[in-house]
Length: 306
Image 1: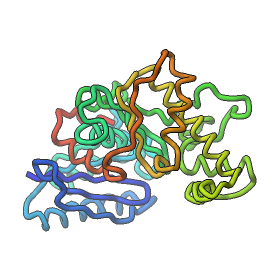
Image 2: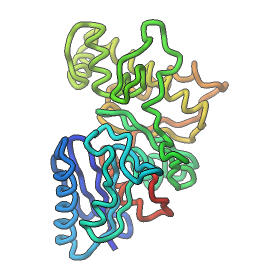
Image 3: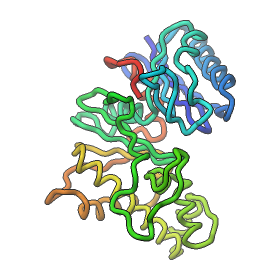
């Protein structure tokens, strides 16, 4: 039997098919129809049907979403792809595909993938972070996704920046309506906004990284501030969860010097005489989330998990 995984991102939708041994058999990417729920449904259904035509059989379908399924309503919530919020995504897809569909938060899918056969394989507790257009996280304990009573376990990005400095208060606004969220500081757009505030220069993270590599002092300072804030944010996680491994994924995770910069700083904030938690890049890179979506059908899964 094949397992299909879909990563429903804000800009792209990716599909992958894994065989029973976890080998990749198929992969495709298409643009996500932004701000259009019906076209989003049609895109997913077309990807699944075309993939199954190539595979020659029907597969299970797991989907990583940029939010969670509400345990109260069964509808989507907390999506930064805001056109999904309030929609019965699982029910609509099940009706069109005529089979059960499993949904989980995209960061939970990342965590499951990396805990299964990635950078966190064999670890008891894995905390996996997506640093990209947004900032989220997922938790896997002993091979199982931790979802929580409210389906929000791992919603690290919508907690405030720990130990804020005077100049960091109250912090930039976040789409959730609050100020100072980790997502507003640590995401790609958050880094660009920080650079603009500090220098008056509008650059995206790629340009900031390129200029920093050339020795630009302002860009080096922007990356150093980001490393310091990420160190504080992850130290907070270590103090609460004490994971064996923290895995970083997403475009921002590839910034130069990020992991050594964080590890050099987080010991100042972890309530311990040493930090044995490993900090790793996702082994499967930006494909980890879609692999985790496929792996949703390889675990004991509670519907509504997010």
